[in-house]
Each structure stands twice: as structure tokens, then as C-alpha cells.
Image (tube, rainbow, N blue to C red; front, side, top):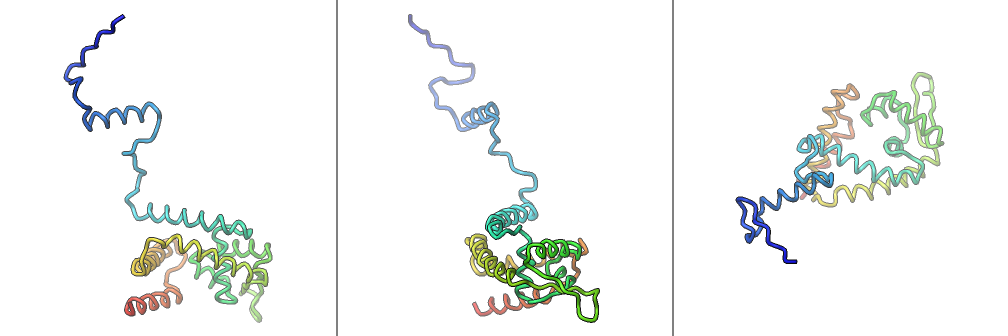
Length: 208
């Protein structure tokens, strides 16, 4: 049986190639039928600084967290360990200020680390209201492992940035952090470490 050719739809040329717009229309229809996300769809706030910062921080935290889990730690706890490794001993107030968190938040983290045998707390001689925190021997071993982890993740984070971009990024993030800390009432001033880092960055920029 011979099959007759069907007439072309009105307004179309059956012998002409499909145009770019028609191709896109067909692709959009197929996407809708299959329930796939459209290429045109973009997350809300994707052009905001906050969105980019959250995405980078989330990925950084995930990469760090995977490695910290092998040490029996959660992401965020390593900052306390690193701070104590550098300072030797700190009051709870100084620790909270350095980490730009409220004292109760720092206290909770220290309590968890103390339960793991990583830190120990001692009342200040002559003033029991002042509590000092320091690493245990096990904590110092953790600090060395954490430093290696941070170096690995830092290399991944900055892989596509040159030295100038890295200095600029550090400076901008410190400024942003200070603004948020002031808004949250966690810390209203730059720490001494911030000033030292900024001076080092300026000296490095002049040298290069």
C-alpha cells in the first residue's frame, strides 16, 4: 500500500531546515515533558555577593569536613584547636573574640572538645571567674593533622587565583567579616591578628 505524503503545516516549508528558534522551542518542549530543569533557570540571588560567598563556604566546609571526620572532629571545631595551638593558652573571652563568635558559642565548642580529651580548662589563679583553655597532648597532635588538612583544602580553594587575587580576597573577606560581626554584636573591632596580616599583605604587595 502506498503511503501518501502529508501536506506541510500552514506557514512552514517541509523542505527547509529547522531554524535556531524552532530548535530551541522543540528543546524547551522536550525539557518540559521530561520534567528537566530549564537551562534558563537560575537560582534566586545568584548574582549577589552573599550567594557566591555561601556557595564557596559550603564547598570549603564540605571538603574540610570530610577530612576532619577522619579525625573525629566536626567542621568548626578545628578553628578552636588551631587558635589554641598558636596561642598556647587563652581565656574564653579572647577565644570568642578571635573566632568572632559569642562567648556561649565558644564555650559549647570547648565543652565538646574537652569531652574528647582535646582541650582542658583551668581557672585563673587568684580569680576563679576567669577560665583559661589550652590543648592537651592529644589536642596538639590533632592540631598538626588539622594544619595538613587546611593546607590541602587551601590549595584547592586558591588554585585559580594568583598572589594578587589572594591578597585582595583575604582583605575583602576580613572587611566583610568585620561588618557582619559588628551587626551581630559578636565583635566590634578588628583583632590584633587582623592588623598583623594586613601589614604583611601590604609588605608583600610592595615587594612584588
